[in-house]
Image 1 (tube, rainbow, N blue to C red):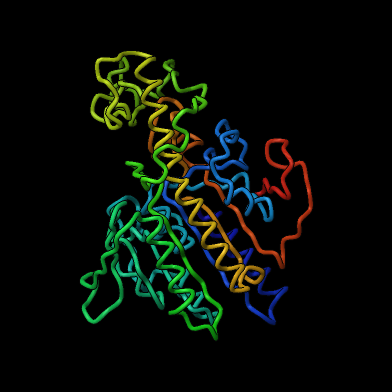
Image 2: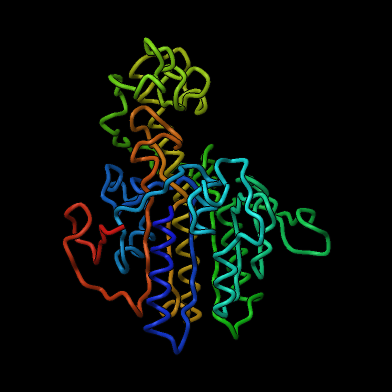
Amino acid sequence: MKRLSLVLVGVLFYAFQVYSQEKPNIIFIMSDDHTSQAVGVYGGILAPLNPTPTLDKLANEGVIFTNTFCTNSICTPSRASIMTGQYSQINGVLDLHGKLVPENQYLSIEMEKLGYETAMIGKWHLKEEPASFDYYCVLPGQGLYDNPEFRIQGSEPWPNNIIKTEGHSSDMITDITLQWLDEKRDKSKPFFLMHHYKAPHDMFEHARRYDDYLEDVEIPEPSSLYYRANHGSIATKGENDDYVSFIGSSVSKRNPWRNMGEDMGIDQSLEGDEYTHRAYQTYLKRYLRCFKGVDDNLARLFDYLKKEKLWDNTIIIYTGDQGFNLGEHDYIDKRWMYEESLHMPFIVHYPKMIKKTISNGCNGEQHLFCSNNY
């Protein structure tokens, strides 16, 4: 995650040097638990489903970083590392109970020093008030998928100022961002906007308009979904494999306390591979439907930027807060030291700096530019 912060700083520094006469606007977009293997341009087994057309188009006109990893694959620590540029053991945010006080919210503080108006909209998840931003409208904690409330600045001290919305959170977060861009920001200044979605965090509640998306499609399965041979060292699997039934949330029935089939309402009388297959199919469809709402809302945001002639002078950065297991190794969730848990999408788009040059890039496919340096 520290490497991600360094990449971000490097991109911004270069842009400022080359285009110092007019500072670019910056939008830092983050989705929750959106892993690289669920992004089409990364060429995984889900790519033939075309799950991210808007994001793929952005990537194919920008830079696709293929080796971006976090160092602490949990929501709160990963966000704190981005805000501070520090490892978890340095900034003190080690787990989901961690918090980031305003004086340590360095990213927004430094952007303001550069003359930017700053805004934080959507999922914050760092407990303390995002008071280092000029404007904020953030979900309380994890927040709700349907009819979410938001905490805002107001006459009462944090966290007592609440607004209520009606709709799906991905739609509501985009509405709030568009309203801020159109009506609330100081248009005499460049802006730095952190636009963060709750989706596709579990339990993958999508807007009802996506109920039929992928309904009749067989979702490709990872080769390790039915993998049973090894669950790590004795520290994780226990002597005589005593812990194997309890480590890591599972797709199959391996974990009796939290397995995706039970969470997804799969018939509990089914056993073995049939149960795992049914659970995986339901799990992935709900996950991809949930992100479909994000991808469509990104199209709304990008259309606005183009309409208002902000597109060419805005750096757009897209990432997830960490990776995520989509059935690999019979895991869901993150936390475990597998590549799927740590590998994040990282895409940068900036027409003034990034030119369209075709290259045989990611996974041997035709993309405009891919970088393996981070």
